Length: 206
Image 1: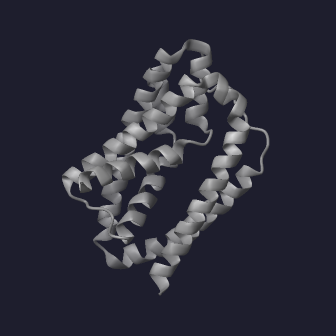
Image 2: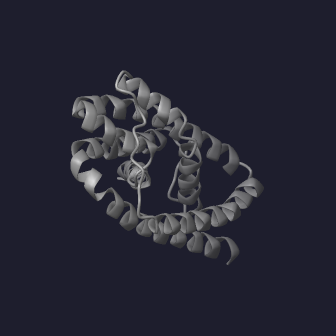
């Protein structure tokens, strides 16, 4: 049962964290409109392979940090400000009405390698997963044993793949609703990250 929980943690955080229009999913949307769902799937596989490595690096870094209580305590305190800043960022982003959907790929590029390249340059991924693992660890919801970590990473990979797949599958509809989707999801993320900051502060200082 706990194995399922680790999978769901990885899947849920990865899916929700990737749902707002970004370089990766807007590229998936463009590829779908220009080349079709088959190429989107190749793109999503390329992105997901890199996400697996990024999630593993995040877990490894967090485990190293967790072995030093002082560093972990400092990181948890820093996490309060990080999540608070993310909450403000998502709230401000929800106020933007226009979403850019300029193509991020050329028609002669291979979708699979484009996915790998763009995912490698997605510098937010590793800090994001580090934050997730630290938050889960602080509430004793995470284990660094091999099997739980494997299922967490598998969940993260499938969550990323699914959101890119859905962007491609419903490309035309997503193109019409991108602005509204962004506003709604960003408000939700602003609330969630704000709550995480509050709960982490309560746990750290009380």
